[in-house]
Image 1 (cartoon, helix red, strand yellow):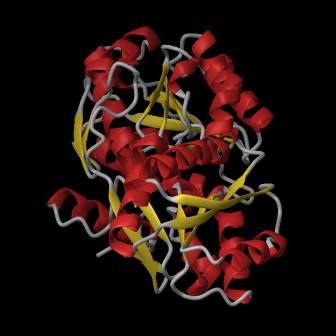
Image 2: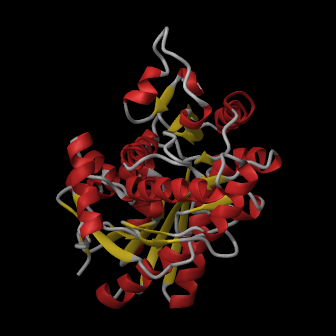
Image 3: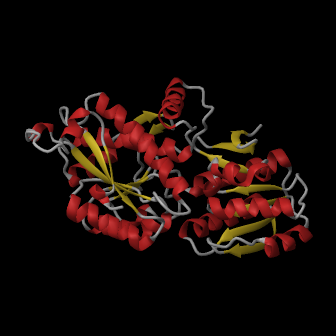
Length: 381
């Protein structure tokens, strides 16, 4: 699935008419503004990419129903499927820049994809916004790289401190995926936070992102009698760890404390009740009572028949902010959009969204700790 030959999302009869043979050409003033997105739409990690795409598309509907951008021009997204592959992410980036000629790109989904493909956008001076890239060093790629996702360094310490204060966690085992930039970066954050909090690390065990047997690591961990297991993993491996932990008969009091990779309702769907008790930190919670968030949740469920997750919420707010930046730029010009992004803010379902000098979220105060129970995340009490 490639670019305009794969997925293009837009809103309204006007955009649909563009594809009809014999339709009169639109004036320049009414032509759609097409931006790009590189996301994982197929493959084992498409749980993240599909949620992100759904968040983008819902916000896109609302932006276009409200009048579009730049004096009424519809906004549309040309999607490239990375399938979680770095080379495919790079190729998608080149397609969007060279053939589709977009002035702004959203994504990619994973930090390791951003480290591979972000330099392509930066070198071509096309602004790019990651909505789920939380690893250290993402925006250091260059001045055209932004992100709206809170770095793990702002989230993980809150989760671990809460576990220490509310659960009395004093000694833990750590597990992390050692072949992925995101999970390795999150591990580095976990290691530093545990040391700062004075929590003893009994052992550190590694695994590959495609591993499915975690019994050796968990058997060793069980023999050490930890208070909790701190895990940096993506959904598939994380769910496998939870299932193996249950099969090995760990006490229910030994919880898994996860990074951002486990902040997905998919762990409940895959691991079932083995996921109960899992703790994660998040900048967003479905139960937030403010009207904007509840309207978003209701609209998302009406459109897709399922609850949104953090990745959908971040994407939804990012698209709204991007539309504002394009409007502020006054033209679909990459340099003007880049400059506009630096000064644009949006009050959305995540709270106030704007960028600091490093082009990461300026407001890092909204972290909430969530607990998985019965297949859903709830605020941890």
